[in-house]
Length: 195
Image (cartoon, rainbow, N blue to C red):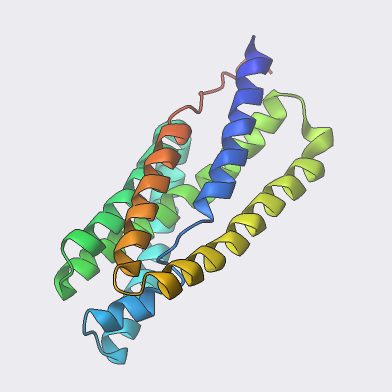
C-alpha cells in the first residue's frame, strides 16, 4: 500500500515537471512590461528585486517549511505562483508588479529545496534509488519538452491573434496553474520513520 502511494507521488512529480515548465508569460515578460509602459530601468529594477528576494527567502523558507510540512510547502509554492500571475494581470500597476515579484520569488524559494527533497524522499521510500538517474532523465526530458512547447504556442497565438494574444496567454497560464495546484495537492506525506 505504501509503495503505491510513493509511486503515485512519482507520477505527480512527472506531471508537475512538465506543466511547471510551461509558463507562457515568463519568456515574454519584458514585452509585457513594455506594453504596460515600463521603462528599461523599471524592468531591470523588478528583475533585481526578484533576484534579491530569491536569495533572502531561500534559506528561511526552505529550511523551516521543508522540515515541518513538506507537502504543504509545495502546495503553498504553486499557490504563490498563481497569486503572482493574478497580480500581474488583474492589477497591472508598478506597485503591484513589486508585490507580484515577491510572490514569484516566494514560489522559487519554497519549491527549490523542498521539491528536490520530496523527490529524493519518494524515490528512497519507493526503493527506486537504483533507478534514480533513469527517473531524473525522464524529469529533465519532460521539462525540456514543456520548454520547447512554450515558445511554439506563444508564437502561434501572438502571430494569429495579435490583439488578444497576451490575454489568451495569461488565461492559459491561469488554467495550467490551477491544474498544477490540483496535482501538487495530490502529493502524499511519507512516513519513513520505520527506516
